[in-house]
Image: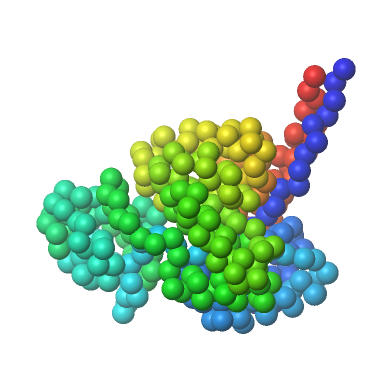
Length: 334
């Protein structure tokens, strides 16, 4: 006898930012199928984000829909500091690393020949010595973008002081989930869980972001503590040649399915739509395949936070996920 698969409804997440901070825009995004939003606290505190959260609350009231709210912690992620003005990095030029306002731990770790990845790997430097680097892949660099030193481990605490402040008021702001970046072990998650529980956030779900090979290797112990696994392909793609990333994504997805653990796929799902009203065919296929692989949720980041077409982004994301769900529902299995 043949039966039809039971298909879970895929969560559709956008990211709050200047491009979608308006109540009217958020109302339309919710109406188009957005079920949750991410607030990136690497750039602001919950208190500083209150105007956007008020817009979100008003949007939910306007369309009579609920919306999950995830806060993305700073955690042990390395970022450059606040730049006075954006830097334009030209290929072949030599850059003084202090111009990046990089954390001191990064400057101390740089050695000649060290690769330095900026802004999720969009820009690439090669260290000439401990203080200067040659621009290999250039572009425009703005404040608070990620910085990574492939092959070099820099130990940082699981939570920053700013993280603890944000966690302390998460429950009162209606936060439903906390995303912990660069999870290195089950102990990282237990630290976050303890801070949440102490702040009255016992019902807040814990999302473990897999962003380097240490997270991949420790996945079995993360599955025990996390409520949901996040395949965060930006920094994860910096940890390996990009052509190896799809296999890693498939491995994580398969392990999550085997353990019946929900997982989210995120980063550059509709990257072209930051500047285009229509996505590429490859991006649509990426979303479709993520749902086929069993993703409980899919998320866009800069596409809605800073892009030109936040409403269209959600329309394509939600409709593609729904089409994948219909495909699965129509696939008969023995």
